[in-house]
Image (cartoon, rainbow, N blue to C red; front, side):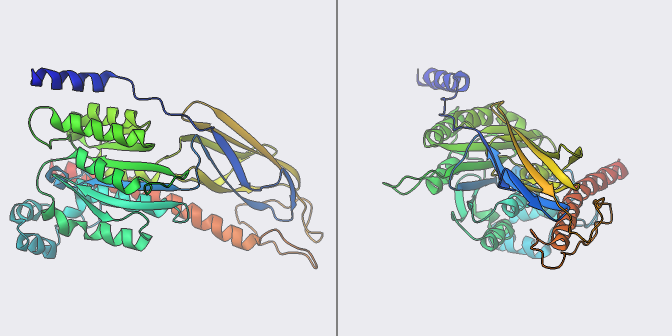
Length: 414
């Protein structure tokens, strides 16, 4: 009877609709240029703003990282750039063996830890941390297998988060075997909840990385039921769960992960190739800003080096032509709502420049005329544009290079 009741409960939890959350008013706000009409004397301006369907005074995020033994399998991509002859750091193997992790050390001795699923998770978490503005985000790190451990408490500095991620491989012997979703979610929940008796309008999210299905606690369907209940409790507290099912082994956990995300008004994303999780987390959307376009409707030119961050903030650069320029900002959130904001920016070149000055590929250094007050300095904006363009191109090239290198290695093995 108890077995039948447990099955029925799981069946109901899996099929029942997620509880409806009260939707915040969707928004799109342009912070730069802030005024509806403005005049500048430079032909390049920086634009910035934020949008989405959730808005708060800040955002608290816990990144939960699966460190179960299956994450020590090869990711299918060359992650650290040392080629097919690369291997696990001998010092790490010696450390693990000296701490009772002989079995883990033997497993890693035949492959390169830096190319494993876990290494991809760590790289992805590091990439996400690098994109979260510490003035708005408070971040914590949790690792989990048979149990869960806090690697870095909420509000840790970026340097502390980086040290926790780089030090995690030495803690692999502390987790045991199995995969306990419940422990991970409950630990993250405790970190995220405000102190008793206090209220605020901060957003709260769990970024949940796993390559498998819950297996602890054992016996019957308890692992799934306990995981779902932990997610339901977090959802009722206003915590969203963004789950990433990594690799082919995660197929077994897709239904549970989908329901966990659904009960918290979060999302599930399947990443079939583990190493791609790095770029997926860099592009994570925590506020439902699914599309963003910024363009100069007067010239037809699109914004350059446009970046969108996990909290819905964005920045980029727009080229202007002499005279009025109508800038159009368009966004769509994950509720399907569309938003549009316009700014009219008049480019008035200094008197000593020809009226036809534009912004050719060479990106000219435009100096201020005598006695004029400039809105920003063009050379500084040009440098920022170059740096951000190089950053975006480097990430795209790196992802493609790593993927191609691993495919060539696999072909050579065949």
